[in-house]
Length: 281
Image 1 (cartoon, rainbow, N blue to C red):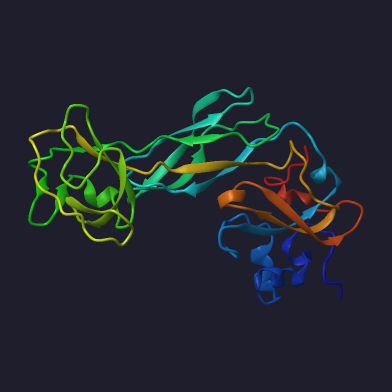
Image 2 (cartoon, helix red, strand yellow):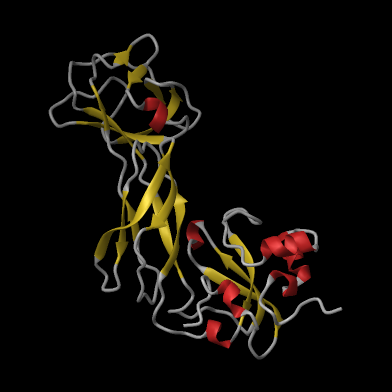
């Protein structure tokens, strides 16, 4: 019995491809790997899936669209969803072509609200910085616990998150803190946070300052990249046939690589199954 076929569906995909992602070659894993685009489903930090590529799907064209957005850094300190800016085909900026979703201070997803096409390379994506959380250097600081009272602390600062302390011009920094310096959340609850100079470091000893409101903590800005539909640039697939498609993250975020598993000529039948990822036109 053949181990693959030329019908573009899970049952005809290469059974032993699952071994490439350290899974047992069986029909359950074969089905899960077929067409997968979920980051981390099989390999940490990568989206690995098996696809059938025909001659039209490996060609180079000039009509790529943004298929999805991949978060490369969830950021910290977000109390609300942030605006997302996507570069347009002329190199300028289009605002609010995508929306961000925030949970517990981090950006958990970026989703498109407008279909954008015409790209030949992935556009730059910018997520707005989290809002600064202001506090009074006297009334918000508790000497005994070294805590800073922030009303939304429980929803936006998690232990270990990186935040920047800022003091407005003309104001006096709290003892042991320096304006413009990054610190880390040591503890947080529904009303207050404590700070450390390093992840898992000792709690910084704080003393009430002057009655000033020009003090704030700002979380880290989230980042994301756009992944294009694979029409519009050289895809890098060596041959038509069954391939493993890998989308990287981190330093290789958005980059697509192909490993040919079974090369053959001709086209697949029932080719519509992967058209969202590999459009024919």
